[in-house]
Image 1 (cartoon, rainbow, N blue to C red):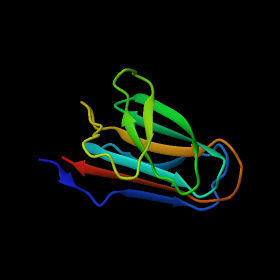
Image 2 (cartoon, rainbow, N blue to C red):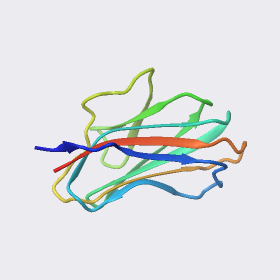
Image 3 (cartoon, helix red, strand yellow):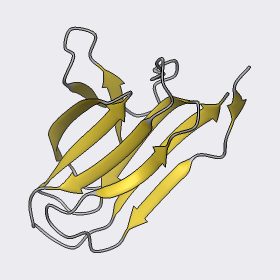
Image 4 (cartoon, rainbow, N blue to C red):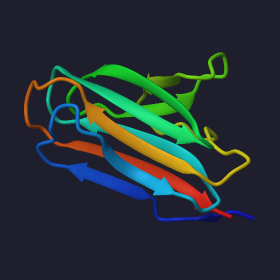
Length: 126
């Protein structure tokens, strides 16, 4: 049975444009339960990249300052993530697979300001 962990948290002050920041990088048997992120500057474009078992999924979004965005894997595509703007976490959006590699990274692809990026990845370990 999976054991819930405290989660991985990134609070990156003054993020540099096009620099990847790693939130969760593990080779242990984990199941990602949910991923949420936000930026504190208006007009930024954020790219979220999730690696599961060697498969890379990514998506970009024009973010609104202070709004939380949550990640869901789009079952219709093998290469893209579906990003939702919602007022609360999306339960039961787990990401798991046959091998143990899990990585979550984020970057901003614009330079509208110096507002911090926050990302939270909740996960469980087998």
